[in-house]
Length: 241
Ligand SMILES: *[C@@H]1O[C@H](CO)[C@@H](O)[C@H](O)[C@H]1NC(C)=O
Ligand SMILES: *[C@@H]1O[C@H](CO)[C@@H](O)[C@H](O)[C@H]1NC(C)=O
Image 1 (cartoon, protein in one colour):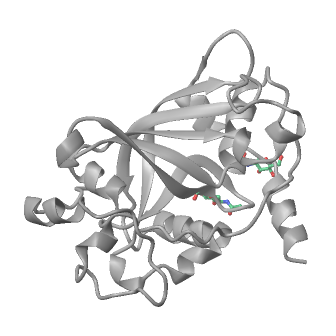
Image 2 (tube, helix red, strand yellow; image 1 turned 90 degrees about the vertical axis):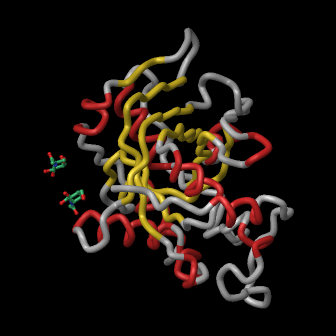
């Protein structure tokens, strides 16, 4: 699927503003105020500080990788910037993600994006990205007194090409429902921002989950792995009891 290409004129306007989040009061018709287009994701976090089942044994690489992806609900995503002052530089942003529904993990990171955001703009020019998720997002590292950079505070760096998920397909229905399930705030994102569902077609998975350097996880085995951990489901069920 092709990414929308954006006119240079629009872009030149939008990158000068300070980051500004929208709120109900400030909501304005799309493109009326270009300064508001620099940060499209509201500050309101869905929920929490979660406490789910601890990660698997660090020797179980595939299971560990899938555990980390399934238990993280946001990611840093690095793209190649099209901002005029830093064109071609890596540029990192935060995105709320899921890798499937709470009960059904796929290992594939799914995103809900607006073409007005930094990331989608960069991707319109170059679909290559790297996504970082870390157990620092759960309470595991803090609980075990691990610095975020401690190798036992497992992190995954997934690199690949980003793709739009075609609207109306079963995958779109599944991914959108999964995103809204874990990120209820998405239901209140401004309706006029042309939201779409995107995913990464993973080319490489690097993981740091123990001492001794990075491990490279087979993408095929990672995707084929039947992850049956339902710690996220239990966690949310407890939360909403
Ligand atoms: C889980 O999601 C996959 C991918 O969308 C789908 O093929 C499968 O049927 C789903 N399984 C369940 C139990 O919902
Ligand atoms: C995954 O494992 C569960 C539990 O063992 C099993 O019920 C399910 O059929 C498996 N799914 C696949 C696609 O192998």
